[in-house]
Image (cartoon, rainbow, N blue to C red; front, top):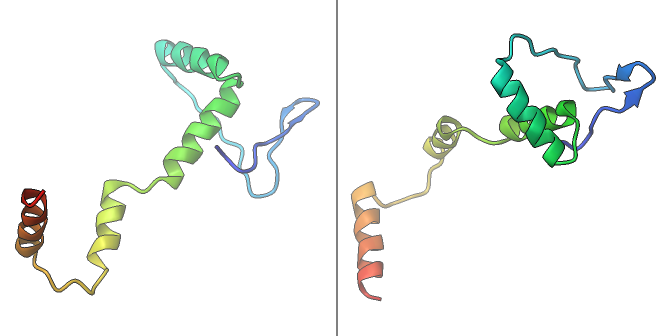
Length: 94
């Protein structure tokens, strides 16, 4: 979940410091219905539900990002083939 959810003011959602107001347009009707139903099931407004989904997505590393971080690490003295062989030997010994 997002650490800071926007609060409702008298005219709708306000955008607190560090937040930007955005609008999602041209959402297919079936997608809107599904998301609205899921939001209701989670006890959230559609706004809250979508914000939480976006926060989770943005704060999760993509496969490409993980691989880039891993490529920048050093310290392993094993080749990939040696690592596979070591894991296989450990598994086979059980």
